[in-house]
Length: 224
Ligand SMILES: Nc1ncnc2c1ncn2[C@@H]1O[C@H](COP(=O)(O)OP(=O)(O)OP(=O)(O)O)[C@@H](O)[C@H]1O
Ligand SMILES: [Mg+2]
Image 1 (cartoon, rainbow, N blue to C red):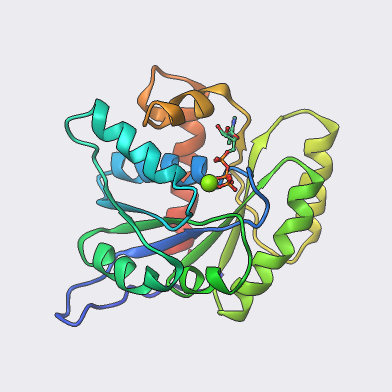
Image 2: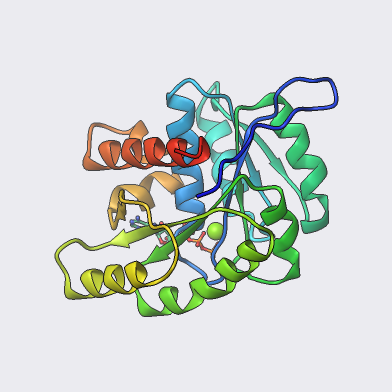
């Protein structure tokens, strides 16, 4: 894992760090991971900006729902087209400690600006071989941009043969995999529709899961 140095803005202030979430396979859990990490980092006292560059606008819908139900969403939000990413991302990074970019299910040249802006690229892999086969494309693009990547197992069903098989195949790949998985839990799906994160509901196993993932990503961002 490479050391992601904190950049400086033109005024000399430090810029926040950028996490881009990418995976060509649709439905892998990119948006779910993005919003839960955003709230997870915010809960730790970090200022967080969430950016949606997916034309489907799922993270945007989540944020608008949040605005309708909460006086203070606790996060900043912005959208951009692929080519607008550098400008919008920089604006958010000037104000926020952490910027999280949710991307469309693609691995083509449109994804490049979001990868280029990243200090760390997270690649969610839902527990399926289809997801596993799709990771190569994003890993290659990220490597071409010289970016550190971390794969995150999502929708994991602990104890199943499929989960063990996918985990074993991930381990064989020359890529870092987060120790903390995001299990398949209905609370993630339910809270997404309410404009909330899973840690914003009554105590449930997702609380520890997201905290572990945030801690691990924090270390990765600091190059530890
Ligand atoms: N860990 C999880 N546990 C249970 N359900 C999940 C989990 N992660 C995602 N889901 C559900 O799976 C579906 C797809 O998730 P999500 O929208 O986050 O994927 P995505 O990769 O962003 O999809 P797209 O490629 O279309 O942008 C949603 O219905 C979501 O609620
Ligand atoms: Mg999405």
